Length: 199
Ligand code: BEZ
Image 1 (tube, helix red, strand yellow):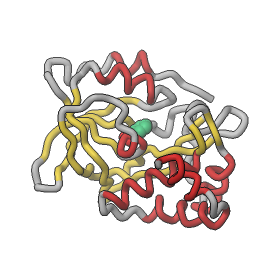
Image 2: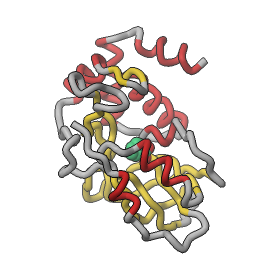
Image 3: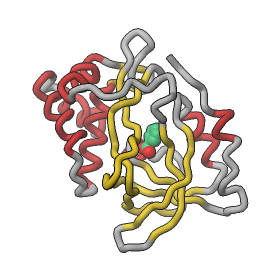
């Protein structure tokens, strides 16, 4: 099921008078920055946990066999590390289209690794969006991911690229790495396919 959030995101005027805005990426934006940016820096946000709880019917799956991608779940004390990009407001038109299946922009504080802090934006797929699929065991999530393929490619490729990008950032994420371990048991060739496509 798809919900098109482009029109809702266009109404978000929070940073309208800013020449540039920080965007915090916690999912594919970490490993697929297909947009121009002025600067990028590792960063984290507080009070949010990264979870494979959003269905993907349009990118990494189909309506018949949806995949799973990450969203953020509010959780006291949680820290979610990722990559922040300084972008100009025009870039949001591209991102709103890319993340149109349930993701809404939300302003939030973000923290750089040198202790500096700023306010920026995240894209979040909240629990009330129609593509939200919610919790499942990490082995069941891996099984669903192993079987899903969509217009943007295999769901397993998304998972493996995210896990590798987090390792490159020296970020520990129990949820993502547990799903990755299960996936590699189910499909040992997935890692080879993913790295072959990267080469
Ligand atoms: C992210 O990397 O932050 C992201 C990617 C896709 C949808 C929403 C957020």
